[in-house]
Length: 373
Image 1: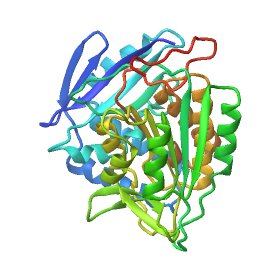
Image 2: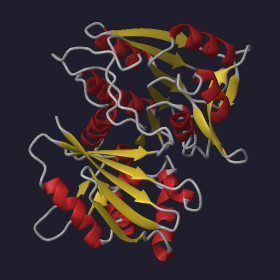
Image 3: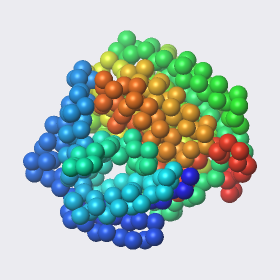
């Protein structure tokens, strides 16, 4: 299916710029994440981090409409909507959001995955993260540019299952995910390796040995406020939690230019009272080091929800979808099957730095090695 792109970039002075495939550029007004709207966004964000709160669809709809109003003045969005409406049936638009690393870096922490086009007379609104015509991604511009990645003849998948011996952490349930992967691997060119209870040393050894294309971590994450970084819980020699920060994890997973193509940070809910955007720093760090796509959860989730998303995501990979489109399919599945908790569909986040990141070719297409791979 043909894919076009719309890149949405906020400059350091706050101006919103939109760029299409044909280099058509629209420079809109300054973003509206300020004043009362900024305060309201912060109120919603605090609520989204509260696992005990029940969300109604009307609440998420209101928040999504607020985000949309803050990012897109009416004239700016009309430029986007014209391109969506002109899409031939079956085509897609990769909708990329890029934020400055300095000055306005706080904007990247906003959960833009809840963006919703508001209802208007004669037309129902929609969420960008679940619309079939779109693929909502976060994009990190890099000096080395954007590699175009072809599917490989065979893909090595490394699954890490970490369950530290710690009564303050919840149970890690990995078997349904492993079963789904085994089912997919039986009919596809996937070589799956599973490592339980990884330590820093054993993880480093297995990465060096396998050079995996795809790493999935199933376990616990947290955000360290003093250090301002995301961390994952590996285990130490005694089996207890060893919280590894983003800088060290990136070093373990590979050298720059030799990183896994895809990293999936599959978080499990723990018992901490303040379980906030646990992988907020990890994903950009891995992208900057050379990973082409990172899928992460920006808020705490139950094992059941994480497993449901994983199954939908794997189905998309098996169909040969681009990685961000597979994420979009997983989000739609959450919206359909968890109607009573509309908060869930905005939790999966995808960071991308590839022009067309695919892990597997579509069924029926020849399998070609990536250039240099």
